[in-house]
Length: 233
Image (cartoon, rainbow, N blue to C red):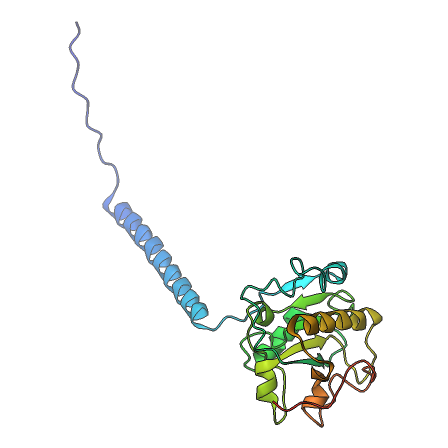
């Protein structure tokens, strides 16, 4: 058998200068990577340290709202809250307008954030076809989690924020009337809440009833629909 010859060792032809350059490139890549991770980590920490706005509500199309709100107890979205319905808390309903001709829950929430609210201040929003579908109902996180609102002003504003359910109609009631779909959904929503919570008619109020001098939901809101003398808290 022929004898196996010993393998020849390969000569290292890399020059010292080229090796140094390779090491320098590797170090540069690692330094760049670590720098990027440090900046990214700092950004994430900064984001995590800020209070996150609460927009995790439930939006119902006009059809879904019309066919589910006020229906059998097992399917009514007003009772399907994430926290058990707190009937002892809710003692009034306060109706608002957004004060702008168009809008949606996210836009109103952003405005409330600019006022240092922790999230959307209303419990419910009803769209007018500009920003939200006409008659669309957004159920806010404050209702789903049975939390106080951030919507009422006036001498008794704190009481109404704690114990009043806020319903906001998208639109400016001082410039244009509300749509028929909005008003119909409003009536369905109000009457369903009244039944669930055993609220008398005089506990359905306009914001202008709660805060005299405030034109909300506006002069074009139908005067015979709702609006009573505000009860004392």
